[in-house]
Structures are given as structure tokens and as C-alpha cells.
Length: 431
Ligand SMILES: NC(=O)c1ccc[n+]([C@@H]2O[C@H](COP(=O)([O-])OP(=O)(O)OC[C@H]3O[C@@H](n4cnc5c(N)ncnc54)[C@H](OP(=O)(O)O)[C@@H]3O)[C@@H](O)[C@H]2O)c1
Image 1 (cartoon, protein in one colour):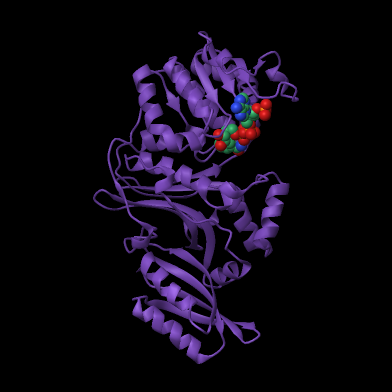
Image 2: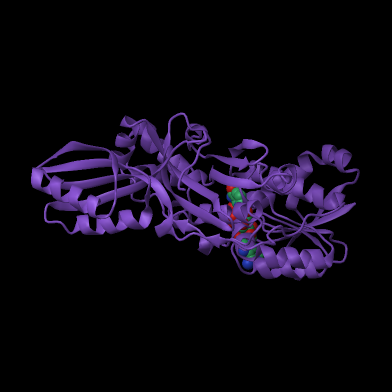
């Protein structure tokens, strides 16, 4: 019998308890042993819970952490503390730990994995990235023969839902966000999702594994989707692109990587542009395998429980464990030096002098254009939509700082990266 202690009985915790019960016999046959939930930590004992939790609830963490019969601790509370402290204590007490906590793993994964190794137990976190999509284990095991060159993905379902609705229904950002909140896809405080921090934590975890180096979320350059307007969606569509919040990391040379979470324009035939609504997808490029894509539900009660329960089975099964794979060092390239093509939308006075001054500022800063188009706005103003050639982000920012101070320019409304196929035929982005 494998005894499990669950810390947190919210959306995912409830899914895990129910899945362990409904698939009890299948899991027992696959594992060769029964899995039993012994205790469950919550804050509030008076809340109505799944009937499977009856008689198991506690509000004392030590009832799980100090219970000598509990083999696997499943942390599903979320947040950095006390989750990190509980995970640490469970590992010190030689219990396997399974968690879905991207915040703790992205910030403290290395120290916790090293502790797990010293204690001779597992620390597994498949559900922390991509919910139900298998991605951590495939990257650590199935792609272990490869040098990973690039990881790019749609790692946040809330923002993907918002951008999909803006594109398909013509809604504003605010309208799409309110609908996401009504459907339970976005939290009442949606800032971690829409500002890109949630995706940055997940990209940090994937990059650390893929590039064998410790890349924490604060090393990822992050932009959110709040500035995307219906105009951007419309102009992107006219140019044959879809806008996605893209999390992307790639090797740019020996010991150097770029890691970015930002809105990006993807050609409509790009594999990630077909990923709609709350779905997530991750495209991994290895030197031997080429591109592989992982697709599925990146959140939700049962998809996430699917990944957590698989980790419980894996931890219980034992065998040779894989610990921290981020043993190397890399330099993360600063955003100003990252090169990409960019879409820029400006509002300016409708006269030839304004346009000439804009072109002058671009030229002085070495910004070449692939295309520029003037769109009518009215009231003596026009919108100017431009696609640049490959330029360093810092050079473009310098040019736009000059441009926004020009007399005839009202606003630099948006700048969005353009993700294109590289010359070698693989889908690249910033390079
Ligand atoms: N929801 C998803 O779709 C999803 C997907 C992937 C990963 N995750 C990750 O999974 C984890 C859990 O997410 P969730 O959506 O299930 O969260 P949730 O619904 O907010 O549930 C959190 C649970 O933890 C308990 N809890 C929180 N702080 C506690 C504390 N200090 N002491 C004791 N109990 C505490 C709460 O107790 P009460 O019930 O008494 O309030 C609640 O049962 C997070 O790390 C999240 O990032 C979630």
C-alpha cells in the first residue's frame, strides 16, 4: 500500500482525490500496489468537499509531514510559502514529493531537487507546466539524446482564450477578459496571466531543463497582452498573422540563450497559430529529433490531476531517479540585444512631413522596413503600420523614443515581435 498525503484540496487537489478513487483498480494493476489517500491538508474545515475526502481532512501540516506511514506528499496549495517550506520538510523526512507548483519549482527547483537527491526520494512536477500535457518527463527522458535548440509555446490558457476571442469575435481586450472571468478561465486578479508572469515561470522551468542551466523567472524578458487592441488583431490578420502570447527560448551561440514571453505575430501556417481557446502547446526543437509538438489542456481539474496522479505512480514505482539537470551555466541575452522582426503601430498626423520625420528617425537608428502602410483613422490622424527587417530590440526602442517625441506623432500604440520561419526552414523568432 502506498500512502499519500495531499496538501491542498482546491481545483486540482479535488481532481486528484477523485481520479485516484475512480481509477483505483486500473492504477493498482499498473503500479502493482494500491494507492491510498491518508490525509488531506486544508485551511477551512467547514467548506463542502468531495465525499472521497471524508474523515481525512486536517488543518495541521505536520499531520502529513511527520506521519511515518505517508510515502508520497502531494503539494497542491499553490503560492511560494508555506508550500516551499512544506516541500522541503517532506523531502528532509524522506518522502517523495509531487507538486503542480510552478512558482516554487521555477524559483527553488534546483535546491529542492538537490535535497531530494540527498534524501534519495523523488521530486516530480509534471503538472507545473502545461497542466495535463506531458512535457517535463518527455524533455528529461525521451529527448535526452538531443541538444535542445529551441523551446516555444503557448503556455497560458487564459491569455490564449482572450486572444482567440478577440480575433474570432472582434471583442476588445476588456470584453474578452470579462468573459474569461465569467467562465472561470481567469482569476478575479488576472495579472499573473495577462502580464505574462505565469508563462515566464513555465518557460523558466522548461529552459532550465532544455538548456541544462538554471534559468529563473527573473531572467526571462516579459511583456503581457494588455496593450493588444482590436486594431492589432485586425492588421495582423490582413498581413496573414495571428497574435499569440508566445513563450520562447533558444540557444543563440555557445553558452548564450534568449528567453522571452511576449505577444508575437505567427504566420497562419505556423503550428502554434492553430492552438485556440484555453489549449496550450509546446514546440521543442532538438538537434537529432527536429521539431516535436506537445498539445493539450494546459489547466483544469482533471487534465492537471492526470499529470499529478502519473507522478504519484512514478514516485511510488521507484527505480533510478532523474534529479536536477540544470548543472551548466548560460548567459541570458539582454532584451535590447535580441534581434527580431517587429510590427509597429503608430498614430500620427495625416501629413507628409510627419511621415518623413518618422522615416528619418528609423534611418538614423538603422531600422530597415519590409513594409509600411497608412490606415485611415479620421480627425486628421492616421495609423501607420510597419513591419521591420531583423533589428535589435534596443535599436528599435531608441528609434521609437525619438519618434514618440516628434511633433506630428500622437502615439506609439504597439510593438509586437514577428515570429517567422528561419532560413533553414525551422520556425524561428528572435535570433
Ligand atoms: N487550477 C489549475 O488548473 C492548475 C493547473 C496547473 C497547475 N496548477 C497549480 O496547482 C496548484 C493548486 O492550484 P488550484 O487551482 O487547485 O488551487 P486552489 O483551488 O486555490 O486550491 C488551493 C487549496 O490549498 C489549500 N491551501 C492554500 N493555502 C493553504 C495553507 N497555507 N494551508 C493549508 N491549506 C492551504 C486551500 O484550502 P481551503 O480549501 O481550505 O481554502 C485549497 O484547498 C497551484 O500551484 C497551481 O499553480 C493549477
